[in-house]
Image (cartoon, rainbow, N blue to C red; front, side, top):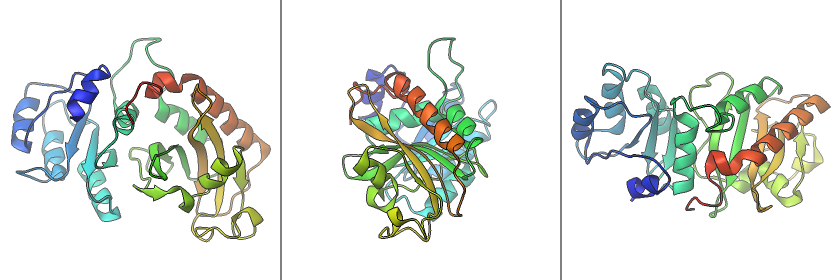
Length: 260
């Protein structure tokens, strides 16, 4: 089903029923991205990724792990094996396509694609004092899905937790007001007085991201576990980046034509 969906969006997927079959195919193929279930019939997905990374020419192949659990230990094991991102099953086609676009290393032709998502987030991170900078999507089940999260201390992987309820983030305040929300210290800011995560997520600035139809797609946000001063320059930078994303979301993520 995933292969059929990806093919409808211009990909040329090559599928394998098990890990050994995948390794045999990869002996003669050089894909842009490896997407693997962690629960393969003949080996763990992490073992597959480690073996793939040992093949000539595939040492830096980006990988996306599909998991039924999404626990922190499983996520960390997947990252240690070489995966850059993990998705909770059943993965929506929109999330899978967005993940592939975020991790792939393929060089595009000039004008073929707008600015790289990871490049934009990395640049925005340099304008923010916060450790994490994310492009997050509001899902139909009232959770947040990370298109990509830039971790300044570990920029090669997306550490955002799977299945995080919108209510467990300050993005809920952006969704409620439809406006930029800035919190320098949640422990003293009245906007976060009743929020369950005020002692864990202390600083935050988020801007609503809208699709071409005007509906709120999610947020572009930057946040940290420590209190941070968020001067006007940070707000200006994140709002400018948001406008850039809004102008190219349909090209980057295929909004309006992706299955959700």
